[in-house]
Image 1 (cartoon, protein in one colour):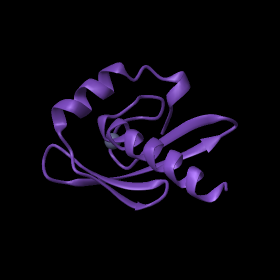
Image 2: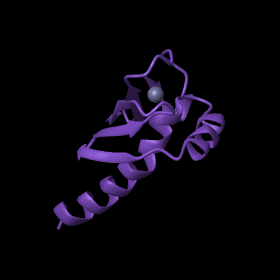
Image 3: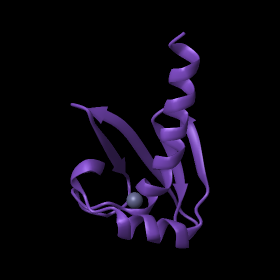
Length: 89
Ligand SMILES: [Zn+2]
């Protein structure tokens, strides 16, 4: 688990680009991301006290951004924008 605002994420974003993962939305805030060995990780994204929190089922320790999490974040941000736009009117 890591907090986007408090974690260096540049490396994880770079690794996510190299990974070319398949990201699927199970529901808003819950995603699956394929790993480098064809395995699948579950990534959860949510907001806590105004910060974006990302949790992944891979072995990356807490406080370190992983590439699966950073692969799911753009989809989550996109979904947040479109869903909020659809429900707030
Ligand atoms: Zn991960």
